[in-house]
Amino acid sequence: MRKISFWLFIFAFAAFTSDIARGQDDATQQQIDQINGRIQDLLDSQTQQAKRLASLEKSIGDLQDKLNQPTADTGASADDLKKLAEQVKDLAKKQQDDNDLVLKELEKLEKAGGIPATGRKPPIVSIDNPTPAADGAQNGYYYTIQDKDTLTAIARAYSTELKIKITPEQIQAANPGLNPKNLIVGKKIFIPKPQ
Image (cartoon, rainbow, N blue to C red; front, side, top):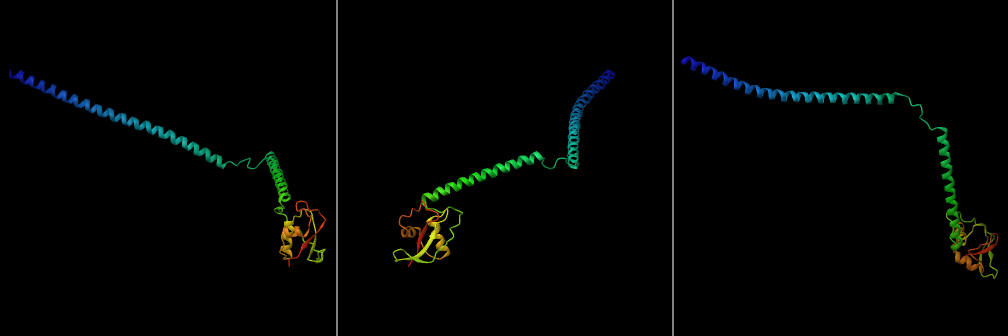
């Protein structure tokens, strides 16, 4: 019986070691499968990276080719220049129309309030010899009204050129019946010389 129990012991031991080995084999196999999965993921990622790099290299090559090619059309065509010239002419016409409108409005303002037009020079003072007024009470100058004159512009011109401090009101007072809104070109007016 000893032999039988010995063989039973060996058989039980072999079964036990076989179960242990089988358990270890299963755990090892799971680890190997996990490692294989990770390796496969890394290989797939590497393949995708290689495709991306190839695509980028192709794009860079295309851009370098475009930069190295001489461009055939670097200037504007004759039609483009004609269109541009027409646009410039249109803008110039609009600007001229605007300028004309502004000048008309300024003339209206000048006629309405005796305000000299902006940008217009004051009249050149043409002075006749100092002459006494008709009644002999006052000295002054005779001035011939010119186109686009205003009393304000005339007063400024006398103040600037002859250093005579005179106001539009003084000129009007020295010329009874003078309408400052309707000055007649060629008419002589009296500019009083202040005392």
